[in-house]
Image 1 (cartoon, helix red, strand yellow):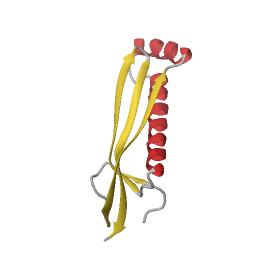
Image 2 (image 1 turned 30 degrees about the horizontal axis):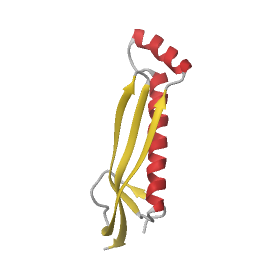
Image 3 (image 1 turned 90 degrees about the vertical axis):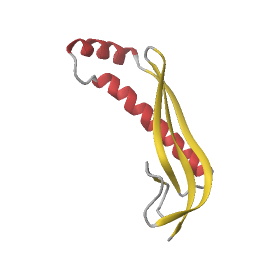
Length: 110
């Protein structure tokens, strides 16, 4: 078995077969930008291109959602998470929900 929990966007994992489906696991984060990020992002948007301040908010939210999904899989004693995906919804300007989710499974060598 892989050490820790293997995560893939694929529906299977080469060299293994699913011995048990444990259900959907998820990690949810609702994140608001800081005042500083909002000001820097607004200023940067005038000039176009990548807005680093907003990128920081998004990356931190994805990272936290991913970690929470892993914790949920560990609670189920999963070996892997298959078909992992991200989703995001903006609730209000500057406030975004990020969801990381997938199917927790037990694996066996083939």
